[in-house]
Length: 370
Image: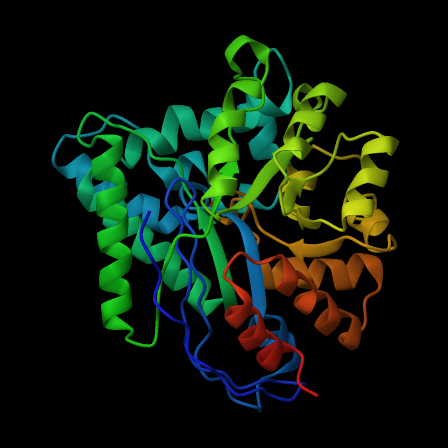
């Protein structure tokens, strides 16, 4: 694993509209992580822009799922012109007016009519078959980093799976990714990168022999190497059995993603441990993973529980069309959070990051000025 650069100090700021300079910190391979600070903002922005200007921590975002439909379209055009793809145009497959509706997920559903059979084919049958060579990996990675920067993200942990293609081995994919991020860092000399943690994710129905314990040695080694651990947890009914959740918790994760299908005893254990929860409202609601719409989302439950910290996240912003700034707008709208509550929520994930104590202090100075 690569070693990271030291993170520089940054003076604290005072609400309501903070000033801050670009900063990037962490990239993880096999789950890739990085963190960025938005460009200095103007104090005379309209109130409607404050969710973008708000310094935000993003801990649950997939690289491939964060590629905008426009960036995918650009890759598709290049490949179509050279006869290197027979896929349909991403602007047709993922029309903008459907990104914010339920229809796109209905279109994707198969006869099994489940989340796993409606959502994951968009990746396995389409996006993965479009991002297959060095040029497409470089272009889309740069696009994703720029989008996060422009949305006011001050710390980002971005994950990806090393995946082989006809043009790239898994090792070449990672090498290309690291080189692309290094070039991004070179063009922004205030930015820094390093490896911080390991994640378990993917189609919850695609399990060797139906269980996950075969990965236990990998996560035990990650613990001994000092890497943080986050896992997709009870994301679907297929991955919500007591046995599986017990195995996941035995890996001593610092964070859990989604937390939808866990039982009451598991909820109590999560609260006892005070784990950081990566909650993805738009993903869960639009993919029909929860009932009751936004108001019925379990964000409402966990924000009242003492112990756990909440990290609002986007999961796959390219698919669900809701950047992190919009997720904060949604919780303010549907759960009645006022301005101070939003600031408090934005700073909750600080202790849940895997970027180290120095980075936590930097974020506190930025997000929790005295």
